[in-house]
Length: 220
Image 1 (cartoon, one colour):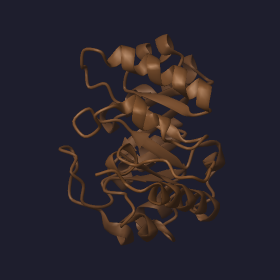
Image 2: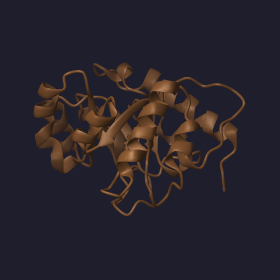
Image 3: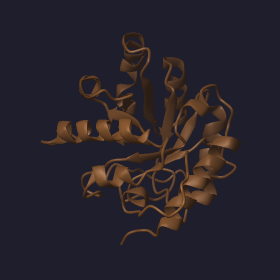
Image 4: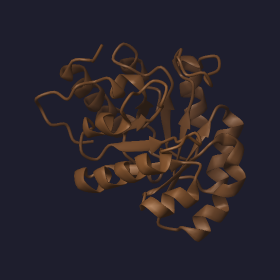
């Protein structure tokens, strides 16, 4: 069932609040505070879902090696340019370059590639996935622009581990030297709990992918 537009607007406003009141690491304001992660199993039409995003939001496209993922990424790139969105390609730097994306998002296991990417593509945004304090520290040393810390709340993602919860999330954010965004189970019923944790925004899959745009315009 699609979320009412007012709930999508509420997510956007909370994302803006988090950016204003989150931890003040260098570069936090250069990142979108509201992100959509694509997931072919939980999002029927990723391009249609991206159309619902407010201007200035971010997309992480995860192709998972599927046939047609490159065409989907290209469609998202064209949409991002037209609507003022930020597009990162998950893990695949070659595809990111081919479709003209704004950068890449790396899984935690690929953190070792981050310094090389920063040297080769100094204008790219490079974010990483993190699931521990140690990973956040490695991401900071490697020069990541930001980290998506997960899973914060219970999530239907098959890769989600045991939820961190907001208390542990806040403690981990305090150790970070780069901007941290929340991922995992974030939606209308949980997003307010992120306030006071220090995160500068969040990402979601179903909560955004199923939402309808509201009447108002919320710019992130």
